[in-house]
Length: 289
Image (tube, rainbow, N blue to C red; front, side, top):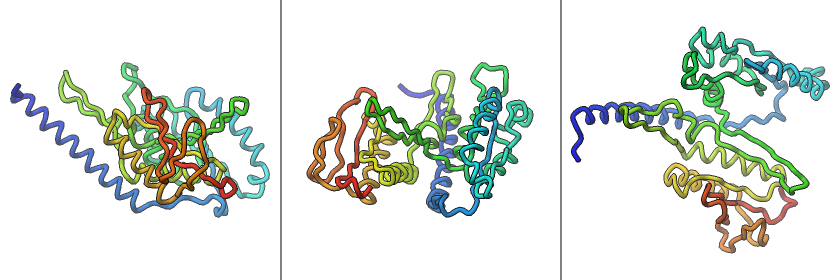
């Protein structure tokens, strides 16, 4: 069925918007290539912890968080090794007044810190009686390259000792507010994957496993459905595991996943209806981790 002249115009407008998004990500990829330095906190003379109270219940939560922080780090704070800096200016009222989810002065203050502790920030939803501000959390992640949400879970009585590395910037996040409303009938959103972004979170997870005595790394994706973005992500994780963290053969079965003797990563066949879960790495000699 032939498209109408109006539909051709809508297609052209969508193509132009997509082209701008691709150009912006080309620039982001070049920045990732140029900046691959990882902070070694053990070598810092002073560690500055920035505290962002947030809004709503944020200041109440942060008051107690600071009480705990000051107690846990009392010797380091007393010696000057750790400094705590309160970062103001992120109340919802101020952000609405400025029309900015992440004011420039706040971002500049964040960049002067080594660590951030933040309370919740209000993000308006569709239909709320406030300006439709972009998520401040999302902007912080992008501007500070906070690409991994690291979430340890330990329940000894259930033999659970896991640590999740969730991608924070790419995937659905990076263009989450940049979808294309082609016309009243058609809206398109995006999932973005880059080789550099995939490799850096894979490397972070493998390195954590090596340093903390973890013996399995599992990638969870929707690669059975999202063939390109998630498929390429899996390829990148396999590449990092095989080239930078080579597995030893043997080690036998573990958790329903069995080692392959050809040196290739093991593939977990479970959870296929929900995701693709692939244990990629197992170290034979646990003493070396």
